[in-house]
Amino acid sequence: MSLNLPLISLDELPPSVRLPADFPDGAAMPKFLYGDRVEWKSLSDTDNIDTGVIIGRFYLFAHHQNQWAWKYLIFLDSDSYSRRFCSADTAWEQDLTPLEERNS
Image (cartoon, rainbow, N blue to C red):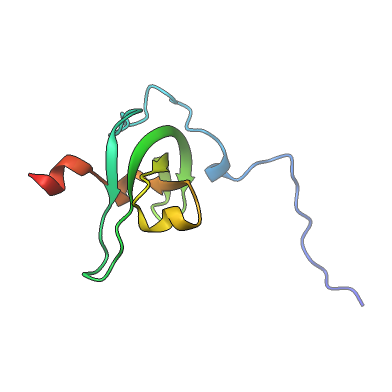
């Protein structure tokens, strides 16, 4: 049985896999730096909010935004809800807030 599927060439990468031509000059400055304390933005009143410290970041195509964006590696605080099953997590810049904002 022949399905007559189109051939896919792996020579040409989809545009979202290529870094922007003007990288790094055209990239937005990262909002968070190594050592910054952050928390995840709450989606509801019943959320268990994780907190931690930025230990890394990388530039990645964010399909949900249809653009390139910063994603961060966060070492979770010992009292964070998720620390029961992992010690670090990643988050998009838009999903984080500086920890100081909540306390001011």
